[in-house]
Every structure is written in structure tokens, then in C-alpha cells.
Image 1 (tube, rainbow, N blue to C red):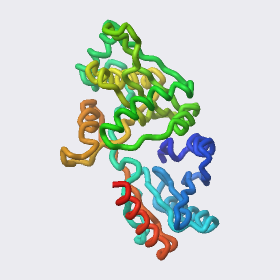
Image 2 (tube, one colour):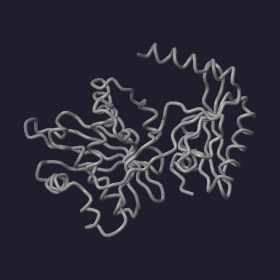
Image 3 (cartoon, helix red, strand yellow):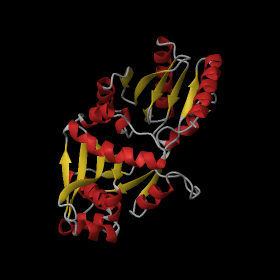
Image 4 (tube, rainbow, N blue to C red):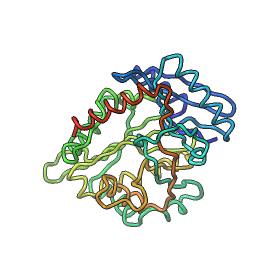
Length: 309
């Protein structure tokens, strides 16, 4: 079974660092990390991209174990996101489809083979920009210093103001960067007009034994003119290859045939310029343990969404 980083022991350590209560269970044929989430109505368990299991029998055993854990904390329901889409057909009939939290579809780039083979899968235009970066006054640095997360947050905050989207807090992002699987990349530009060095793009990636996950990123208006995101993405991929990783996960694309108005349409078009393949997950489902409280939870959830809008 393939274990995504969000169902790993490393992710549990991150949750501990964030002060999130959680339950981690590792068996021969299944594994899960369940995070305890609190609502005004009561608690529930959430398995980001989990549980993972070898087969139908193992998946059922994982769900049975989750139900036992849920009873101990009086959970209203269990929210699961099976990583393998093949497990979807083994969901209990009582499972209710809900809004996908983690992306249901993502774009995967195969990093195996020779470097030249990999470069043939990358957009030639972006490879040229990456090769000429130094001549344009562009440098890229890697950092693990938590205080450097402010550069990413500054870029994300500016983007969020334009797009009307939410960002993580500085403390949350700092805690992520403190983890051994996390690296922050900063793209710096020596601006000839101001003679100042500016950080015009940043990207936060997570690495496990096989995969680099490209989770967080942003660029400035100046960075957009310099094709900073493209240059940085090439760097992230080539660096992952040099590190010996096997896959690069672009972390989320819009569903096939999604309208141009979809909020991920632009990101998806960019990601698909790389010769990767689409990977589908099962999606997000709720296994209800207390129907009455779950109904109340859904009502409160709808009200909160209307208030936010």
C-alpha cells in the first residue's frame, strides 16, 4: 500500500507540534492517522488521505478500528479520504459524500529515469527561463529557518487579498517549516531599477521517501513578469530528482471538463504543461455514528458558510 505523507508518522509529529489531538495506528495491512476535530455540536475524526489499506478486507478492518477509536471520544462521525480510488467501492453504504477537503485529483510527474528524460517532460520555455535565470539577476535559495516563512506569507497575503482566499497563519506555516520533511525555496531578484534584492516568489515543499509534494507557493507582480513560478517549479523538480525522489506531486488540479471559471483552472493549465499523469483519489466521505447530531452539525456548517459569504 502507498502511504501519503498525510497518513505518516511524520505527519502525526506535525499534528502534535500544532497541538492537535490525534490517533495513529499502524498495522501490517492498514494504517491511519485520525485527527480529532471539534465543533460546537461535538467531535469527529478526520483522516486526511486515509485510511490506507492493502485490500477490501484490510480497509474494513481499518474502518472498524476507527469506529472503536471514535466511540472512545464520542465522535459524531468519521471523515475519511481513501488515498486509493479503488477503495471507493468498499465504502459502507451509509457513507455520505461531502465536500472534498484535500484535492480529489492531482497531477503527478515521474522523476525516474535519466535527467535528460526528465527534462524532455518539462516545458522547454520554462527550462530556458531557468537556465537564463542568473543572467536576469535571479537566484534561488533553500532554507529551513522558521522565521523565513514570513516571505512566503507576505506573498500569499497579497495574493489572497486579490483572489479572496484564505491563508494559513504565520505560526502554522512556521511549525510546518520546522519539520524535517519541509523545505522553503526563495526566488530572489536583483532589481536594477532599485538596486535592491527582492523575494519575488516562494515555495514550500514536503518530501517523504519517494515523493515531493508541492503544497504552498506564491509570487509577486514583479515575479509574474519574470516567470518566477515557472523558474521555481523547474528548480523544485530538478532538485527533487537530484535528491533521488521518484515522484513530484503538484498537489491538486481542477476536475476534468471543469469550467474556465473554476478557481483552479489557471493553476491546472500551468501544471498540465508538464508531461505528467492525473492521479485520482476516492474523495471525502463521512461515516455517520450519531445521525441526529450529524444533521445538526450539517445545519451549523451551512449557516457558517452563508455567514462567511
